[in-house]
Image (cartoon, rainbow, N blue to C red; front, side, top):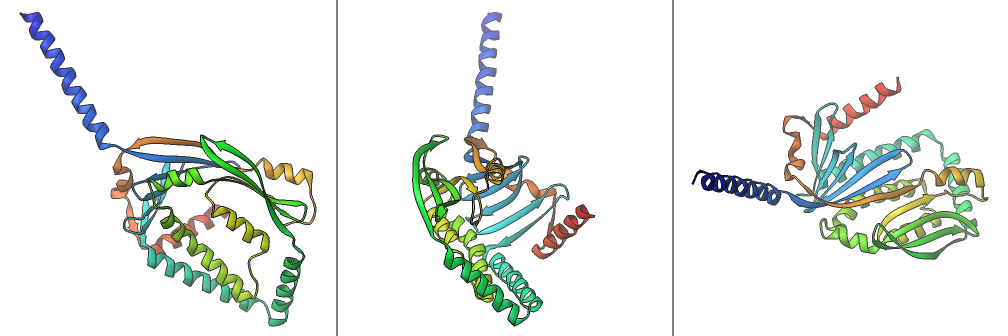
Length: 283
């Protein structure tokens, strides 16, 4: 009888533990992690339930919440963070861009500006941009296309694009939402060029059209050049920007609310603190 009671007790304990762990697992959510290497820098991208986060050293440093269209930036060493909504972020970036434009325009006279514009446009007119689809392959299980972009016969960029991976990301985060955030930088760049009287170079125009085809899994950027330099090319190729790992894993939803014990700053105050910290490192 005692043995029977012990067996029942052991069975009950195991059942309770099993239920407990089942509850814990069900409280976790599946997320898509993409690890990217660029030279010696390793970053991770996290996609989950319309959240897009970037991680450095496995700690989240930025979160785009596309449910509320809000950006959060975090500095763990200083234990501070800031939040800003999309429209305020866009307006702030535009103001900063305009201030930079006015500063640069004031630093050069009209004659020098015209000389810079004419020289830049003359350079653009000598370019002979073209691209080729070189290969179809699989990158970490996802179908991808390898494109080469040339200026005449000189390679300028190599890109590996995956529409399949973009569609996988789209199951977690609306890819169009990510593009809205990225377009802020592109619009500011266009306004910058327009104010100086120039435009985006024709090689970059082709590259951006290719990027629209899917997610960039790998990139080698040789830059704009008029001749091949094998030694420099080898150095560039050793610092390639590429995905090293793709993983679907369970995450704790509290990962996005970790900053309860951090001090919240306004976006402007946060930026000023980051600038001061960067200046200290240069001293």
